[in-house]
Image 1 (spheres, helix red, strand yellow):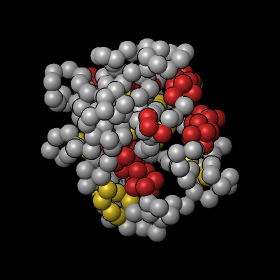
Image 2: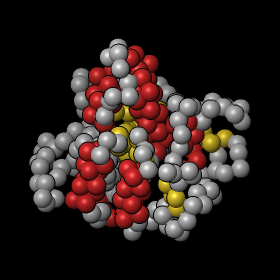
Image 3: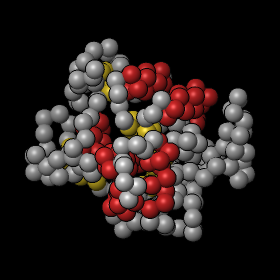
Image 4: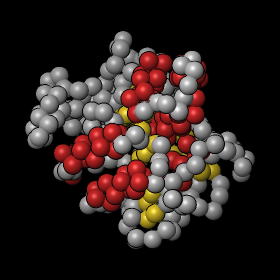
Length: 264
């Protein structure tokens, strides 16, 4: 079973973070305040660190990370990364990998991207554009959409074998939003804290809530978690789901309370 994760670029177990992005994201999921600031949504969570250098040729490394997570018992796979469509990601394989991971019983959460508005239906990065993935946009602490947060809709009309969600109108994305502006979390390996902004920072907030939901009701699958996130989100923008906020900003307390009510 997994002890500390794996570096898929170098092919070894050294997952020390010399850059800082992964540490910041992990801290937002699980930081428990040991060094002075409690920044984690779900501080009891165990982190399986899966590392890549993440150049735009590394799609296969991330697919291997997802397979590794499934094989080693991950409950949630969250990644603050994505491929802009201009970089020609293999969208069909991404969708197959994400759907298979969800079918294997894992909750899958990805960032929407930081392309802001314009260029629909190609604003949301892959795999945040995968229909079943829980895709996360970013808001300020005042619940206003962040200027950089990628907007939907998305389309798969020209991606065989799927060829669905024709544009217009396309499929509304993101699915939910969370705080992602000047977020305080862990600095890179060595300790301390720093602030970062991006849908990268919003996404682990949602992953932390997902962890709390699984603790409240271990019977939940990906779609059960998604349903609690959707139905308890604080609606912003046009009524209902829209292409900026999705269903709205996640509400951890409301989601967990609703999950506990199932009695599982």
